[in-house]
Image (cartoon, rainbow, N blue to C red; front, side):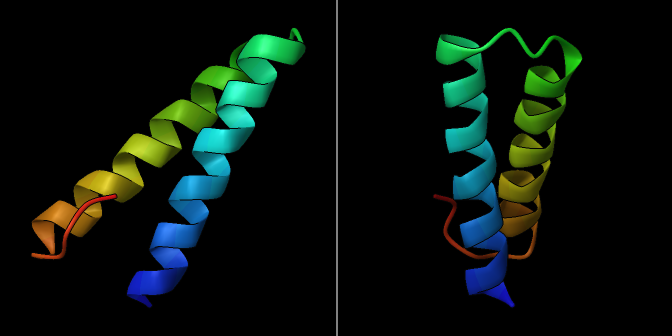
Length: 51
């Protein structure tokens, strides 16, 4: 389950960067960033190493 959270966080951060640099997706970019931050915080709270 930890690997799945890590993969999701990485995908969301990459998606945010692509959207921020390449496309004008508006609120979607910020939603992706917030979700990625939440996933990293969950990993920290669970006692695992963050990204």
